[in-house]
Every structure is written in C-alpha cells, then in structure tokens.
Length: 356
Image 1 (cartoon, helix red, strand yellow):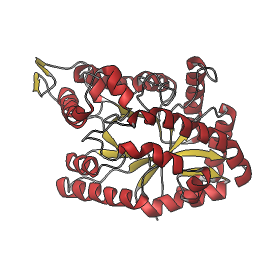
Image 2 (image 1 turned 45 degrees about the vertical axis):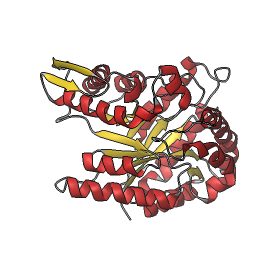
Image 3 (image 1 turned 45 degrees about the horizontal axis):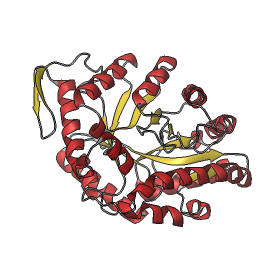
Image 4 (image 1 turned 60 degrees about the horizontal axis):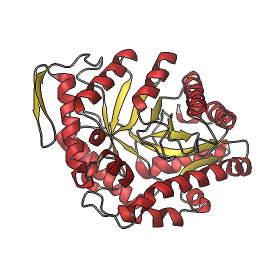
C-alpha cells in the first residue's frame, strides 16, 4: 500500500444562481481553498465550462486560481481543465504562464477536449475536430512556453515567429495533465507524451479504467524510462461527518442535484454522434442507473465517517495504484459550513493515517 498519499480539493459547480450567486460561490470556494492550505491539503483545482449550471461558475479557471494564488503560498494550482478547442493557443499559453509567475511556480496545467455538445455549438466548433484541436493546441502552448521565435502551423492556427512573454517559472514548463474519461487513445497518447492524468471516475467501468491506466503507465514507462510516472489525480465527491448516517444524509440531496444538472447538460447528446466521442450518447442512461446506493456500494464517492472514508480511499488505492485523490466540494447546494467541517475532520482524523 502506498504511503504519504497527498489529498487535494476541487470545485465543479452544480448550483442554480437563485441558490448561490457567483459572488457567494467564489467567496466560499476561496475560503475553502485557504482552509485547505492551512490543513495540509496538496492542491486546488477547478474546471472550464460555460453558461449552464453544470460547471458554469468557472468559465475561466485561471481567474479563480489566480485569486487563490494571491491568498496562499503552498497549494498547487490545477486547471482541471482548460479547453484548447475554445481558446487560441497564444492566449492560453500567455495566461497560464502568467499564473505560474504570479504563484511562483505552482501551476499544474490540466487540458481537456470538452464533451458537451451545447458548448461546441455555442463556440461554433465541430466535435469531429475535437481531438485534433486538443493535441495541436497543447503542442502550440508547450512550444510557446519553451522556445523563442516560435513558428507554428496546424490545420487550425498559423502564427509566428513570436516569442512569448512572460515565460513560466517552472522549467522546462509547468506539468501538463490530461483529463480523460474512457477513451483508450487519450490514455495512451498522454503516456507517450509524458504528461500526467486526471480522471473523474463517477460513471467509468472500473475494470476499463484499470486497463486504461495500465496502458497509460505502460506507454509512459516505454517512452520516458528516465522519468517517474506522475500520480494520477482522481476526483471524488467528498463529505465526512461524525457518523455514516449523518454524512450520507447531508450529502445525498446535493449529490442528487449534481446528477440532475449533469443529466441536463448531457441530454444534448440525444440524437448526436461524433467519431471523436464514441459511447457518449449513453451518458444519460448511465446517469439514470447511478443511484446514491450504487455510488456508495461501488466506492464512487468518499462519503461517511472518518473510518469509512479511510476504507473507501484504501479501496481506490488498491484498485488504481499511485493516485492523488481530489475531493470535490460545494457540489449541489451544499452549505460551506458542512464542507469546512468535513475538511477539518478528515485532516485531523484520516489524513495522518496516510502519511506514515
């Protein structure tokens, strides 16, 4: 069993504006981030989504993480993730480098392909270009971080020669982490490129995920034998209370709201297909089958008393190996006071058991 496991926090909003304003949500997320640093958590992470209750509070994770950077000294700042398909690589490279400078080298740059049809429609992007734009976009960003007089040409962008200002603090560049769900190609490509991985396993078949992670780690080791394979970040809904009954009663309605909002956005997959997103048209069906009881029975969330959450985490480490859990907070309309209590309880009673 691996020891000295780090634990981070992440924010993926699933709340209506009539429940929480943007102002309130950001205040609460910032207060939890500051508390996480005080308690010894490893990272804070947030996502890029747009205009829907599912994730829409953070259309630009870099802005939120810059606020966190100004109020903390140690937490790693993880974009979880930015979306190259909706951003010009020059702008993305510059803003990420700026955050790395402001934070004195604490950025971990997570990238994703995006997967919600409504966002592609709004930005007038083709879903069939998703993978190509993703891979070319990351390539352009890394070149802009690490070279001068960059000349770049791909099927979507042509620019140069230009030299990026500012350059990131970290050398040769901030860690790149790839967000993936179930597409084997994404895992294998990330390993060959030498990037890290971030996963939300809420709907994944665990057997498939084990195989995909093995493929990732095998490709990484073969392509980069001189480097240690990074810990895989895995995000889980999180809530700790004194008893299992209390934790589950408090978390249940907010996890149900998360599923409701996920389903509302995923419903756009009805009658949509893309060669880049095989199987995504089954997301709504998968959500409908994922009851709270199934989530608990299959360890798809960390919810319970300190002893129960310890057992849940050990189950995930046993299944998936070298993992850095990322605790999802403020899902649904969960009161910030309950999140604070859970973070404190975990840090006091559970975290030391993984740091021997």
